[in-house]
Amino acid sequence: MYKAIFSSEFEKQLKKLKQKDKALYERLEKKIRDILLEPTHIKHLRNVLKGQQRVQLGPFVLKFTQEEETIYFITIEHHDQAY
Image (cartoon, rainbow, N blue to C red; front, side, top):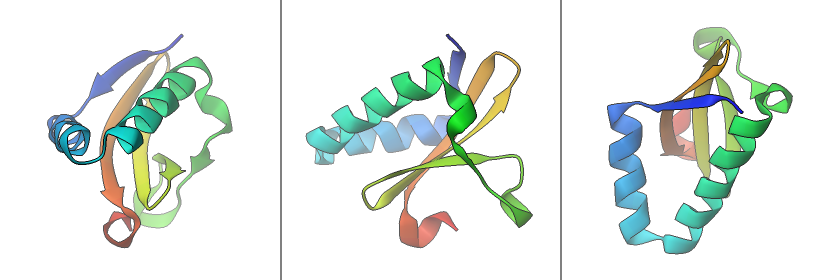
């Protein structure tokens, strides 16, 4: 299992999401656990966002990077603002 590190922005967004949409928050928690178990089959981004990976959760996009045994969760944004 990989080690997780959350950016301060990601933690703020996670806290806000927990208050607004409990069901989506629970799906996000499950997806984070899945990523920590096996991050290699996740879509890689290109161009300006090269080096990042993303997972779609309904209208939201979870972006993260991977370095060796560590996953850095960067942000979760609505699809309209994510790119």
